[in-house]
Image (tube, rainbow, N blue to C red; front, top):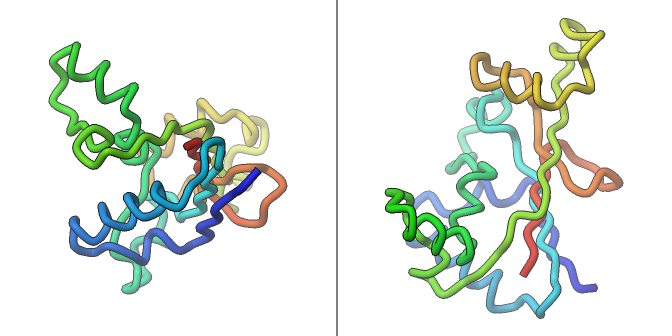
Length: 150
């Protein structure tokens, strides 16, 4: 199976929206059916993203899901105000899974619940520096990874 790996790359590209969207279109163009795109980025609420001046865009699972035509059609049918980027750009990615790598602070503060992803996500919506990266698949090096299917 063909895979594209973007390990700590995507957050550095596309400061202008049109450039970012063109990058997504190009990734889609070069994918073969069944291809997987692995994306590793700093968590959008971690200082690793915020402090590096070369980081120009936060990448989130919801932001990536906007390139799913299936979800775009569902949102349109429900009257949701979410931009249907998959339909607009003629791309169609499905977000398959997202893994989060907790920060050192998380492991120190929450030893009893360190592997509780739901709790991690709830707390990371309130506090910075809890999730360091997103990651997929678990065997890859990195921190936060999103996996998209073409």
